[in-house]
Image (cartoon, rainbow, N blue to C red):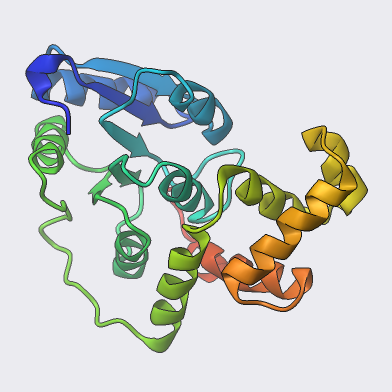
Amino acid sequence: MTAVNDRARFLIIDDHPLFREALHSAVQMAYPDVDTVEARSITEAFELLADAKPFDLALLDLSMPDVHGFDGLLQLRTRYPRLPVVIVSGHEEPKIISEALSYGAAGFIPKSARKSDLAAAIRSVMEGAIYVPETYEGQPPDADSADRAEMVQRLAKLTPQQLRVLQMLRQGLLNKQIAYELQVGETTVKAHVSEILRKLNVYSRTQAVIEVSKLDSAELFRGQAGF
């Protein structure tokens, strides 16, 4: 990780301007000289991440307009595995915290935390620790969690282009539609789909969509306020 005095960069990903401002203020409290860049969506975040100059930490809200559930975290962890991603959420459900950590989050900070606590949490992660709220008590992994963790490991084997194809499969697009969106031939799309099925250890595109959709953990978020 870049030393802070080497002008590290933080990426704040949140669609709420007031909370982006609050996070920016907490970052400045922790590290006054750090460059802070803001994104209002996952799509905008990836545009910023494509910059030649890397980021040292991402602060991600789970509830974003262009993703569902843990999808944003999964995309970041798959495409940028070396980037520490800290979830900043308005909900402190232990199950959600456990799932976020199992998907590779470097920490989980409640949005209800005071600015000084946010700053302390950011410093803790930058020093290499995994931050969780003091009230959080870890839950033993169940069979479903183990299955999801295994699928996350398989997803990490996908290339960025294969991940984009998988996302389009989840949207129900046909090969010719995917080819049009990516400006490639249908033969190339078919090759990507074959590799996706092989790497995910599934036998059909339908099964791939079903298995990956389980990672959204929609049941965790249904009816919950604060995201």
